[in-house]
Image 1 (cartoon, one colour):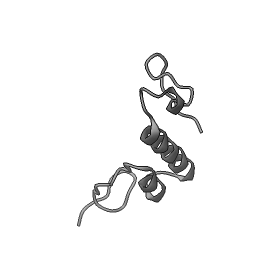
Image 2 (cartoon, rainbow, N blue to C red):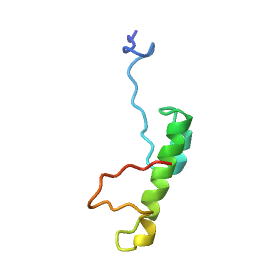
Image 3 (cartoon, rainbow, N blue to C red):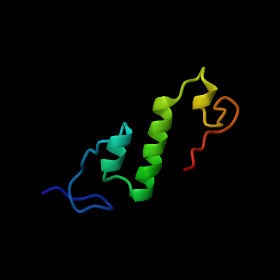
Length: 70
């Protein structure tokens, strides 16, 4: 029988990391607020175009640290 880790009772498990906004909402790896922030981040990334300032939502990714707050 496999022993669990520090925070789990079951054996080791590989988790699927969300890679889009729909997967973020279905993921068991995050709480509700984290899911919404992750979903917002993925939506921002999907519509971002480096050459179109309208898609930047006021962020300048070349000169300021990126922190997306919903």
